[in-house]
Length: 148
Picture 1 (cartoon, helix red, strand yellow):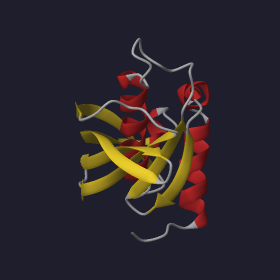
Picture 2 (cartoon, rainbow, N blue to C red; picture 1 turned 45 degrees about the horizontal axis):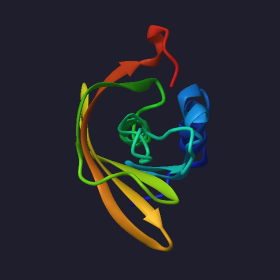
Picture 3 (cartoon, rainbow, N blue to C red; picture 1 turned 180 degrees about the vertical axis):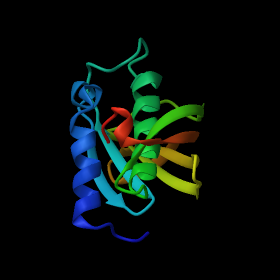
Picture 4 (spheres, one colour; picture 1 turned 45 degrees about the vertical axis):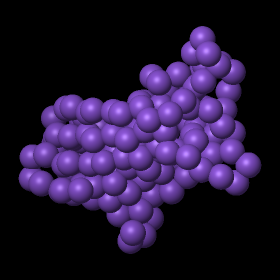
């Protein structure tokens, strides 16, 4: 994927920093490229479900955000995105040192941006796919009172 300008990188990272859910989960942006964003969620015993796997809600949250920020990375300066729909398939338990969500733009339309994301559990240098997400983002004007 193509690198983004410093301005686009700063825009994506600045918006991400305002998502308090990401700070609550402990997630961080690992990479910003044109039409692709990676978010990493380190293991924490504060986000587990009853079987000691990372909760599916946390997995879906970083997957949705990776897709949304991938879409934002290709938006014009006066436009932003909101998720309108997503479907996630949980393929395996979320366990490992960290979880990595990679969101990619598949179609960048005038009103809708279609994205796909993959989520991997990483442990000891190996990686296993644990989820797949398809998400639709609605293009909005930032002048509508919403921020990036």
